[in-house]
Length: 103
Image 1 (tube, one colour):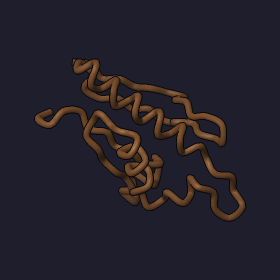
Image 2 (tube, rainbow, N blue to C red):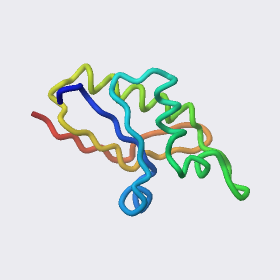
Image 3 (tube, rainbow, N blue to C red):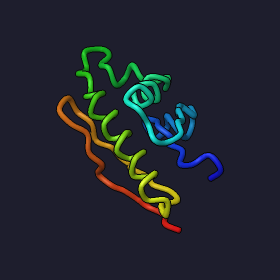
């Protein structure tokens, strides 16, 4: 990693695999970076509530992204981390499953 840890954000599933709807940032993330990495994906409107659906807690996602980016800085032995799925509702965000690849 010449430039340091890189974070990738997307909704997962077909949004990543088929539509390649993802955004990237170098760690560590600021609050603004975290907000922008989320807002840049094409499917952002799904997170903000469409067709009567409730919005998810964007601040909670931003908080997770900031903490994960700091984790990548603090522990350089982490080569890869996959937080999938990240469960998000109107109250909070939490990882239901995490996979780490270490040096």
